[in-house]
Length: 460
Ligand code: GDP
Ligand code: ZN
Image 1 (cartoon, protein in one colour):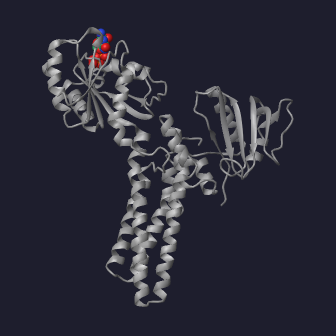
Image 2 (image 1 turned 45 degrees about the horizontal axis):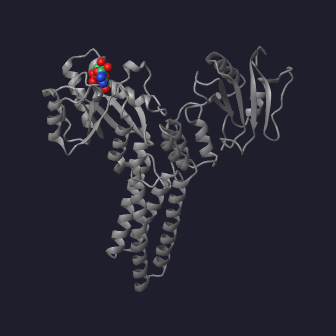
Image 3 (image 1 turned 180 degrees about the vertical axis):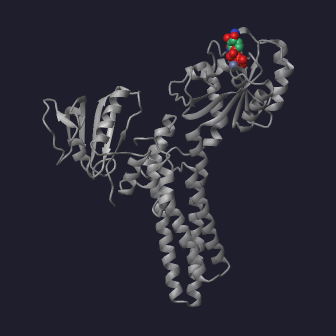
């Protein structure tokens, strides 16, 4: 395939002290030779083996020195994209990096689209589609565990499983096709039996992958967890206490802590997306009615609800309402303010709910937060009851394709069971094979590629 030379800033803007401008494509060397000089101002040639030089980046027109830093030359095919790649590691300032990028563009490269580097890696055969998608998941991974799962995919476990299944399908199909050419009756029966047998085992494997989709989603998006309770019971304090007890937090929403309604915490390696429902009411200047509706909505959307109660005072009608509102959802009663002691009337009232999971904490003093987390982990265990080293699938696109493949496979088996013609069976097997190929991008249309890679961050 013929590609042009692309460039983008490959590191998050403003975050690092070093920023990387990546250049990839057949003329990466020529482009960069126009803008890279040695420290003493001599020109540089990018050829032969990989190398690193310490040099200057200059503007191609004015020759003004923009910045200096490490310049990496990584000739294809042993680079991220499998093309010739030059990486300019310059200082982190936003403006400087922009200037370097502009110099690269002025020297003849084109601005990369989001995900285009990874797309090239895929198109050049360096990685398969599931690996490419895993790279994206890795970028967005919210916890170590989620990161590890994504990493496994980068390493291709998922792809290997799909490939193994496709191999069995080909063998099965070959068996059927051969039998079509030699249509004696008993041979046909053998072929049909084989379709049923192999089909059943493949179906199991597909089902296992489909089942792991939910796990993949949880690891990627977090378990939606609503914190509810009447005003002043300590919801915001609880959210903050959980955030503080946790080092591995990734914040998705910019803004000061006060405004944050949604945060991620890592509970035993499982990301929770915590939503302070009352925050909706407290921080936004909107009609109370809407606030209550929103709160209801987030309870409906929640996979887990933390019902916060103030244990230091007698319960109120609002507490009863909260308990009523959340009874259809999986919930934990969080009895807060135990540092102030438990009110006897509260204790009697709570004993009506003896079956519920109850944890006593003090959000303000940050006491028993670990106990709460242990409890949460127990409750959500079933959602993520996965062998941590098994093969996962992590996105909806793959899940949908697997479901189509599953239907085709069942069609093939039904046809075999009903004694249908072998041609019919062969067609269904062929579609199963193709659908599985689509999952890992081994049969794929240009539209699909664009759609997938456009979801990447710029510079990846
Ligand atoms: P929210 O309205 O439910 O979000 O409640 P806040 O988290 O804003 O807390 C309301 C008040 O209760 C604040 O003054 C907190 O300092 C206080 N508070 C929260 N948790 C505790 C606790 O565990 N013990 C005590 N003594 N006070 C708490
Ligand atoms: Zn609050």
